[in-house]
Image (cartoon, rainbow, N blue to C red; front, side):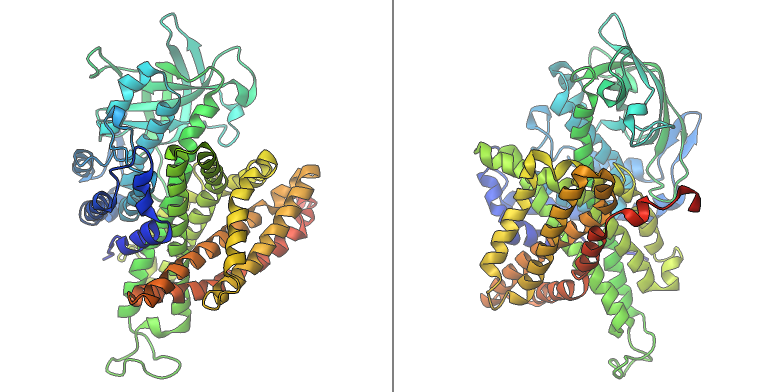
Length: 595
């Protein structure tokens, strides 16, 4: 049977030691969030995830959601778990105190989200979508809508969705057909069909608040004519309790490869009453507040699933005995050696560890920057942190979900045939992880966002938020004897990234297909350089701890893992650089009929 233990020590190492999390309490509004408050929150989140959510992961996958007469029922135990989750205040930790939230820093919420994703991603989808809806409504809703709906979303008695995709359009939202007809009372009648709606219908909350993209007749064509509407499942009464059923219903649920305990619904709106969020024809601006939050959260899904797969692969590799070590028996008292002695198994386990611990560091870095962008008293500092978050959002989403899926697959390989069957749970992580590379904008779309929007924005202003600190770090550390073996590979990879950036910028302006052809490899190159930079920072802290007499296997393991990353994983930047520089001719000139 699979197991899970929250990686609290590594979380705290990154939060406090690598990124100076103790200074969070110096930000206005975060004065109470010292270690004395944050650490018990992480401890309690770990307990909830390990003891309540994780035991429901496999049974939820096997049972799935059921749909009958328009009603969706979640698997056994989910309602009880959600009640504990809500009563424990977990739906409110990152929400505004003005609406009943706890106002906790984004970086703490990110660590909690990782634990939830490791323990039970399907369960986490329900409150996760609600938080995205909260962010969009809080950012762009009227005072009346916020007063009526945010407290219920915050306390978890109501949940939220985002309704974008239609049967004929996914990424190209300009093609959507859902209509919003203005009504005399200031509301709109929403008519259309949305598909792939996570948590669109379920039995966990007493009401569901749909955020729906639709077009008001007579508006501009394409994406410029899209507006965002709030459409509740039940229309609230004057006292705020759910009243009359709105004209929105679930038509069916999808039968999916993974996250089977998360209801993925077809939603039919038949003149449903809705209210405009933000300005007419400015719906994408409001929805992107939610989508950017979700893209960062989806990156954390990749991290969470990769982490739990890694943990189980390590346990299995230490217990499973097969053959003798190539250099002679390592455990002569046993009939054979544990497979962890074999080079290829060690390669796989170290790949999992190097990628996932690197991604955790990346998640903490970006999440803490979110807090700085929101709370720092200096406007310039806020702006620079916001630029970094904007730049890194597509990288977090694409890199961390690609690597999470890869690491989950490696976990199956470590188990061999036992990973392919259901007993050990490894195959579920592969199935669950696969969707994260697709939804909230496919990873190919994230790559296009990076090269087409983030790279040129402000004449490279966003890029400077990454390039400048990394360049300064390399200059300061490259001659350091203790850090040289780590910083020198980073420096070489960073030069490749600089050259690739110049190439993509140069050819992309004249020939957009060239930038598109390079985009996926460019994003991976960028992501690997980011992980190398963060591994150097982790090594620097670990070396200081050891020098200060605090050394143990954790810090020694950090240094050894970084060495493996630099030796065996970072060289992929050379191949990615070559692919970027090769251009797009071989793919774009290939005849369509020859495929």
